[in-house]
Length: 66
Image (tube, rainbow, N blue to C red; front, side, top):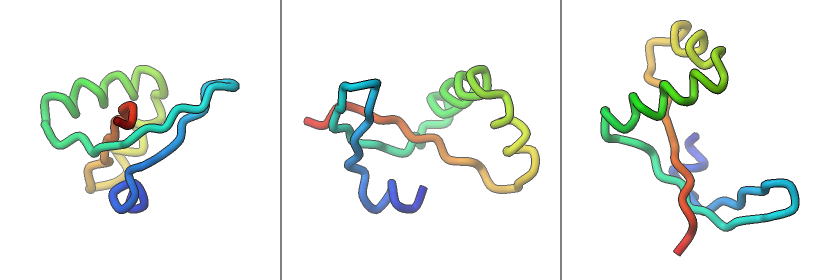
């Protein structure tokens, strides 16, 4: 997570397609809550991770690089 904050330029691979992306940390609480719920629905152990810590696990969004 620290690396994404320092260097938000990433490449995401979907099978053979590679896309240059830029990540941003979601700071808006409503957007974060919506995305967190989607993440937990896709991978329920995320909820367990959050229960085991007092810190708020950050949520990042990858968007096409402009």
